[in-house]
Image (cartoon, one colour):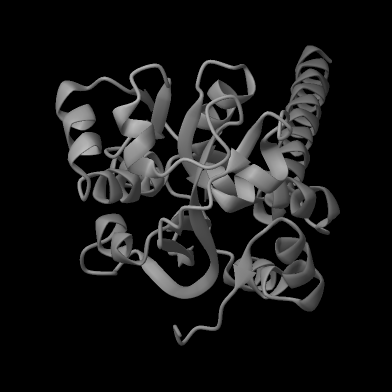
Length: 268
């Protein structure tokens, strides 16, 4: 009888443990199912406004990490494994992966224009050289080491003597990326900056006090969409569906409204 009771007791324990294991498996299955559907995106900070709208309207959950393109590239080189990467600067693909072994595919996506903005209190329209020469103007750019916007800004400024001096003396504000540069303008910490035209349209809150200079910087920057290989979770169809959505007519209209222009895979 004691032996029978022991058997019953052991069966109850086994049944109890089995229920626990099954419960864990079901819960983990739910989590894994969700993870398999969630898309992990790294995107240039200057794309936050339109991509936030896309994130809200897309059929699957999207997790987006915004930062300067160079900062995102550094994260990938340190081991991060996003599904999709959207960065500025055609020349930066090799920085993500020199041998392209971690990149499944990439497409040219949209383009943006660099503009000089400055406060109306100084003049109707200042040139970049005039901004650099005026020590009373708090002038800023994005960090050339962290963001393609900064790298392009640095390249433009080196063409002018006054701006070159400003860079050498480090007598200007350096923001980590496009978003922090816009914040500095909005809070009145800067009187002038080189920014993306799309950011002026979408993110400058005091546009009545800040204007785009008539001076043309003559710089266009292109963005790329990279589909990454991901050994841990390689759901190619989910990635491709999202990329297809990015190139859809409705999304094209959205980017146009935010001051970007979609481009074909063959650059003009």
